[in-house]
Length: 310
Image (cartoon, rainbow, N blue to C red; front, top):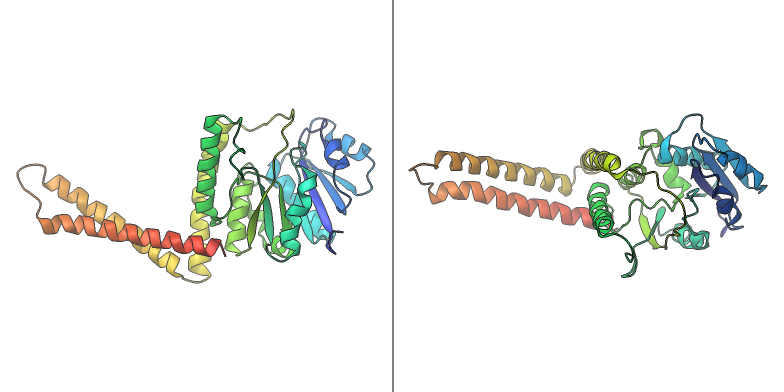
């Protein structure tokens, strides 16, 4: 128990036989359940986890590989069945320092958030030693995820060291959340639709001799598609169906004005390539809607940022 809350730690693991025992052995005593989800590993991940002999450990082996998201969701479901108040995710590769677990739990226990996640990039030294292309990629992905999810106060979206309260977990459409590398991004989108308060917690990553299975050239297009779909999914559910808010009105009006202005502008350019000269009024008919539309879009963005930071 931690401050009268039952804690479950979900450990998604795929071929982590070398590190899974370390993850279990370093899990603090405040944790009530350690749920190791063996995602159809081809090595001895499940056996090594069980061999630790910790009475808190449950090992669940998935018959088919579900991806990191599928394994996490399976663990969250089991945590709910066990009556856990807070479900935490700690990867099976020992990259997540268990000493910072209370920092993730405190905002939830205090009622300040329903979901917390670690942020590795919290000061000027966080990017030291990281290749420039990875820095640019992390910043770009974080910005796109902010726009898609509406959580403009969060950074480092692919960080899987998270904690969530059961009241938020019970409301999530677990069967509809992405299972693969886009899991964290899709989870944030669905949490924002439910208006769950989320908070970043500064926590350094622990880098060791683990090997990443991510192939950026394959993952990036899928992530971009997921973020694009997720953005419109969030806008539709949160700002149209739940309550037709000013965000939706300004967004759709802004897009309409910009498209109308661009269409008029193209028409004017095509018809004034020769001798005819466009009149000031014709030019204004193209420029004014574009400027008005941009103003509407910026206003919608500001309202969305205010909503996400509440």
